Image (cartoon, rainbow, N blue to C red; front, top):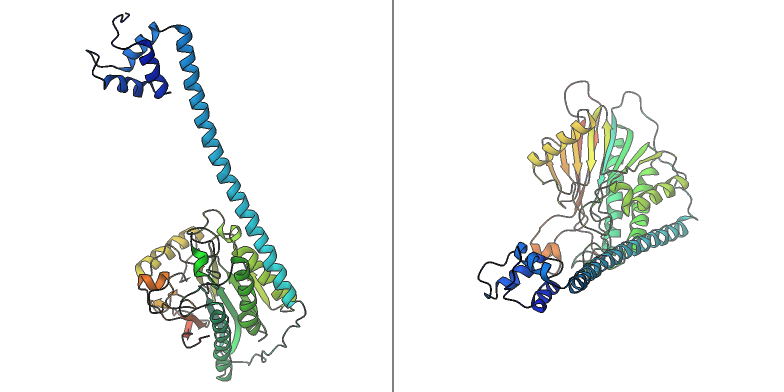
Length: 402
């Protein structure tokens, strides 16, 4: 059926189709809104009107519509290409940052000799202890009213000094040291590209942050502990600040984020400095499992896990099901405040910085309040159902200023 008495000219119909290409529905709606048609202008009615148009004219309008579609597709493709180029540029820039950090670190340490061993001989009949030390949320490069790179380095030094002091106290009291476990739980750098304006709250760029973190952790924590001469195991977990985006990378964050070259450089420098008593575990994923005299612990940064007993216990159960083994302990950082639950089974490590007054930086603006501190403990073997956790100590750092 043809509609001979159209309330619109062929040009008006063609213009409506052209303006709304490639959608005939929008063209029909536009014509219907004029109120000039005695019946509702539907897509079907519009198609019948189009059938009466000159075929050459119709073909021209269709071609114009197709050209509009092609133009739009080209715009979308161009936008995607620009996004891909930016991502590739960021990757190359990050790789350059890594190379700079490693070269700077090796250049500053290649002339140093290993420190002499100190470990006394094991005493027969004495109780053996495993030292557990947590280090997290250094976020070196972060700039607040009370925290900067210089303060971060001084607090690393104080942490290493305090841990060695606690170990020597135990030895003086008659204990043997079986092993030292150093758990580095992530957020070691601040990253000047973490957020859109992160660089304004940093006193150094990401490459320099990686270099400073490497030097500080090795000279002030890893080497003083390794130099004691006891077997030492270092577990290196990535954090949400250890790359240039939000949260954690959802595919192999341990090896895809900036912590991977940082931790591996730390491992190589430790080994090349002659500390053969040290081993490293640098997982490609987000967590690791550590054994304390048969009782297992999960080490994880903890982003996304609330600082509550219920949340941490639920998360521990999830990891136990994944690993298909019983997990006794759960250790995490991220929340910037030392917290323990259920006799030390679940521990949240602190940060090297607190929240100052004045509201000049993110955590201060949000009103957070925490004591700069790190956590350490001692484990011993048990022949009953007690926890291996024997003693624990909070290393306070707020008194260390610039």
